[in-house]
Length: 214
Image 1 (cartoon, rainbow, N blue to C red):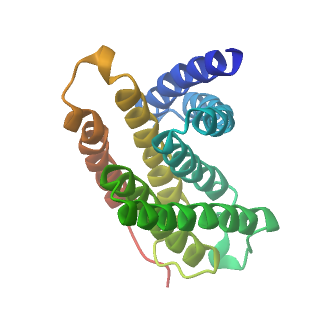
Image 2: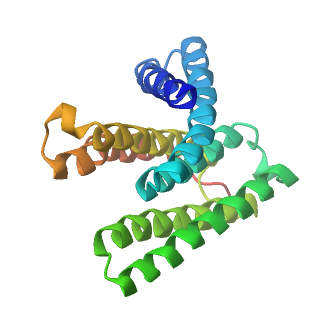
């Protein structure tokens, strides 16, 4: 299937480009190149993931696709919203992104509750975690878009945390979907990327919170 092949190729490119963006985060010219490759690869992955998840009834793939791409989109848009504290307002595109993905995250939570009622606990937990985490991210982004900010480098914090968050989702999707070949414990496949990258997010965000806006 050609869509699956495209999905796999873009997945590999995204993983490599994301790693390159992290490694060269202080080399602006290189970082921008790797970042753009990562973003456009993730855009293709998002579309192909929706198709593949629907034909395979793969709830996990669908949840990861929406969660990861939302984080990626918010991080990408953050670079264009650097002057919110000076009165710069979000565009219709920004609100459209929030509406679409907020609805998706609510759908995941609703689906999770339905699965709990049916007794499908594992699927319910996966859907609920991604939905609830996504809604929390929506809340934070909407606050920023409305100008409720305190950090001087709020746009950079949103960019770094969003991109790394999406990268966690991308790696998790890879490890979980390929775990039979990788042969690692299921728990490590699920939590490994988070355990490795979340400390990096925390460290980078703390460095960026140098001062507050008066």
